[in-house]
Length: 396
Image (cartoon, rainbow, N blue to C red; front, side, top):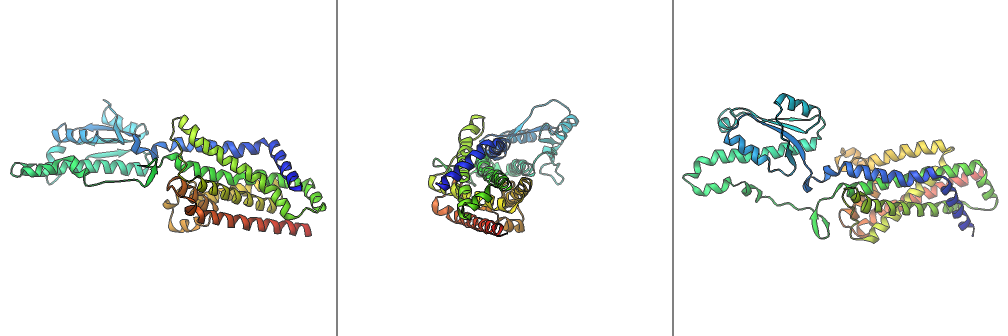
């Protein structure tokens, strides 16, 4: 009965604190929606998302026309028609109105196989990401390589008709076959932005439960509530459990609602649909482990701070640090080795690895068990330290 009364008290306090509910449910939903839509093109080049470029053909030869035609076959980059002079087009690219300007110099075709070839000039907009810049450069390199091969081998076709097969653009494509190990409905595809952003920002938001939990703990401590509870013989374990269970339920509700955002709301607004993997048991285990870790971490913070302001500042700074090291803001594989090593100690890294194992690699319970175990041990350590802190304060 005591435990039920404590749980009911926590739910009543949280219901009155609508700012905390906004933080727990609205913030991650907004993050998921914004980041999934903003990064959709970055993850969806293979589905027809394209970047624009201007092209100025100063040569107007059959060779330059072949270059224009083959570059126009690209699925990722789309030529933007314009009759403006090259200087005006360069200004538009400088202003990030389009991503690239390609200029073919006069005499390009005649000089291609000579001793002094004339290069095609490519100007990139200041705001183009380096990865997109390199992708366009590789696309243009491939087109030029095929065109150069065709021009070089053209004299051989008269004496060796079989050499014409080497001039077929499809012959090079036949030498490469790619596949993605990310599977959805038995098909090899590539993960969308929502597959990356939902687990990342959901996990990040779950650790912010430390703010409302710490606020109510500090307020009740200042109002003498816990002094009265201790005088009634309430031990540290019961006090912690009375906080742990209701907030654990709130975190699990947060998981369900944010997954619904990824499955229903994001595609309803034109984004990609979140797929939940093939193991509901593994997803449930990770949700429970992350919730247990985040609430236990919040209980430790609540017993270390003296004011609500301290709880807010400490939680914000600690969560940003754990999120940065754990791969929430930047994927860990892009970090230097030292930062990757430090990130492996972040609870958010364990949680994110487990969720991505379910969402991207179709992992089951066995696959996510190591991450779930790390989170559970972290949670138990936080609870033990919080209990010691309560006993220490009682003895003072």
